[in-house]
Length: 416
Image 1 (cartoon, rainbow, N blue to C red):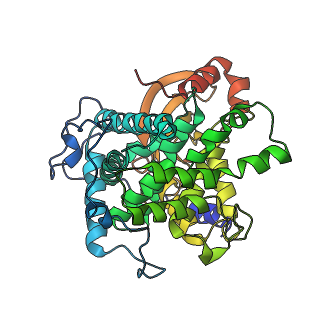
Image 2 (image 1 turned 120 degrees about the vertical axis):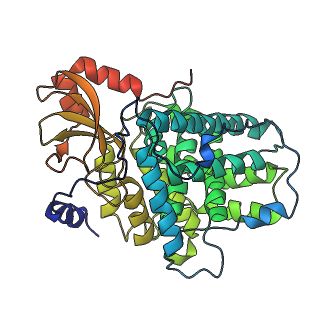
């Protein structure tokens, strides 16, 4: 698949008809009331994540197989019942006010960041009992991703004190979203979230190299390439984790940086030699890393990162995981700054499932790059308005440096 193929297909699509909903509610108005529907399990207050849990019984973790478990065919399709459930969840989400969705997503994302900080901060102090709490958070992530599309938009954030906190949390959320898009069993999706959160624990050993402002030398990069083994070894420090699951997690973490064309590390594996779960986490890891700043380079535009990964299909990543990433993020992921056909400048805040080019956007600037009255617009409900092009950071900096500086500050996660 080439990005130009997707782009061409998107351009040929006729403008969609506005969606008609029963008792239609403008979900982006703070005053709107949620439409009636089945109760959402996430509407209840979220449970606290304790710092220490009693050991998980040996039989309990067995329900979380490696994704996909042995015996599942290479190509799985989502059942009609699952698809219907997913569609109903999307309708319920779209009927809820955006502020409500955003507040819920922020709370869940905040817990992911806190859990990543706890894990990274405690894993080298000895043995930990974190598997149970991470799996409970993974279940909350799965519930939210099934009913609240705004959670994915929070993966645009970075953490200033240590990039690894947000990176780990973001890769976990993105990987779980991909697992759900692929139709994996919930237990497999949650285990995928655990492995994704823990996938870069080995980078703790290389924090100085990760924070330096110059590009890595060949010798330094060779040192960094040792981190998968170090991360896998740390899985043995989880006291509340079944031994069989530890072996599965270690295998996945060892293979996250492998590529199907043998261009990865540490084992130069190819194709079927690489765990499917590792391929999911691998592409989520690359997308997150390229679309976020590092000490030696700025962040890439999310749209350009997607283009790069789509064009690498069949080289670094197989078609299934590339298509899953497209389903999750479309070609204008949350955080993309775009120019609309009206001339206005907007930021993508939410992907519309099934639409490559018509997300929900927040209008930020007028056509002359002066501040606009902020408002949300669902491009599926505005068929005459579309995305004309992306707006690069350099253009924004040249046209409105004050706004560009504010956008840069808003990139960093602050948990008040």
